[in-house]
Length: 153
Image 1 (cartoon, rainbow, N blue to C red):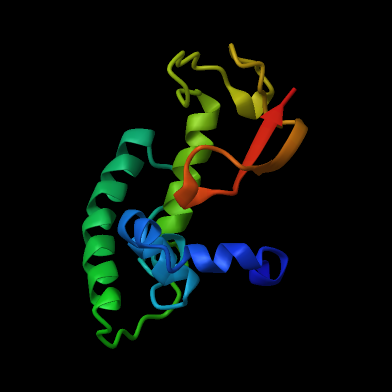
Image 2 (cartoon, rainbow, N blue to C red):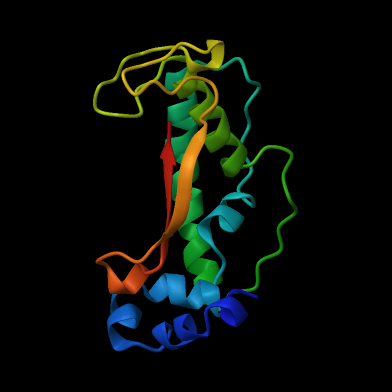
């Protein structure tokens, strides 16, 4: 669908600079490879929800090795037969993100505010972010133009 709206973007997928800078991205757009989030949904993890953030990161570290192996096998076209797990590496990443929101360390200020409770950090973003504007950015990086830019209040 995007190629109807931006037919000029189709030619970017054949641009030698784009192919050199973003080969995996081009293969994903051309349905030759799976996006990383889709691969992450195939990796089974065991979590109860009661783990500490450190325990979650340790599970994540172990799961990444399996992810790397699976991505390589899929990229090489090896036949893979996996069922969608109850809890996946993608679920784990989401759980870690939620925990970070309870003691925010996302930016360099590391304010430790509990965004889940609506506490505001230096950036003034709490539990929800309100968007003041968004647009396609026709910026400096020809390999990723246009990009989508979001500004909050």
